[in-house]
Image 1 (cartoon, rainbow, N blue to C red):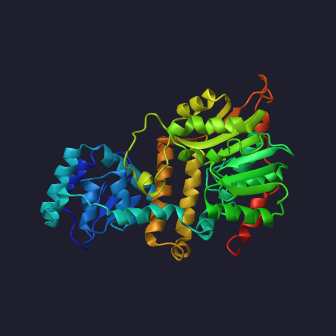
Image 2: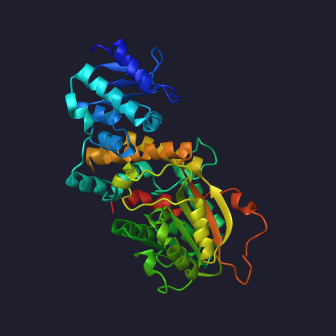
Image 3: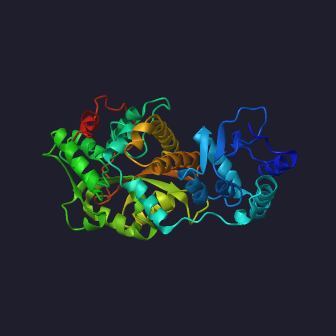
Length: 434
């Protein structure tokens, strides 16, 4: 094993991580040198620096984007608990820039003889950025199924107990959405941003005439395939359509759901979005808006890893901005539930699935694509855990001459969930062969 850091070098790193209160970790360089935050205590994770340029990123220019890029392209790696590393990153983000650069330059000269490269962060090329943006979206259904599970639900699950399986929790979420909307046989149901069709199928199982819209041709085709396999063609449909093209194009609906799509609407389009939804609802109808929201106290990072590589056009708004926009279009807010802890549990299970199926997934996508998804899921779990973001279900009503048509209490929402499986579990197994 290569020599460890000398006493002066250890002192500089100790100063950089002064007052750090997160999980224990170890730093290991490309030549085998190691530094441990808490010597004698087993680290929860080891940050592996594979090349000198990545060390510059870690110490001199740490931010969400540069660290994420270094991980995606293999300059940085994490052994052990991937979730622990986000506490290390958050500490570095908050250290004074002058201190970070001073220590980074001392280490560069004294330990590695790296010279002036430490003054310059790695710059991504335009072609590399364009290729990376495509990693999130252009994936086959076979990539998602191993870690999303049979339901193919790409949104927050709903756990009665933290030990429950992902499949059980996703079934409970779909059931809860339909409960909150009080979906009844014969009603017209619209799912804005239907994904691979799980909620459309769930609503149809409740007896509704369910229709889903999506902007993804792959999701539209998959949803239609699942509808055929479930023999629900008479009461269940899907199409490729933008929500902005719905206004005036359809007959009114009794119930509307939007689960995991709202993040793409953007602040300036909130009135348009809620205005269209309001006009599409019959008087007395209900809408459930399930969406991630940022905390008003969380810092806004203009050049974030998620913004660059995962959701290039996604803009999170606060809960208050969401509800204000809904109310100004005529909606009455009837119920709001924060599922922040549920999304952390969901993401942790997705990360477990990604790791468990690594070799299978790497036959479908490049290594960089896989690492983007892994980092995105783990980083999102950390953000939900510390409260920087949350996910809310807001139940909205279009009153009918003042009447909401709702019961006086919410007791019916949390009654025992239906035990029978939804059609999503019965048909998803055929997807990869179809």
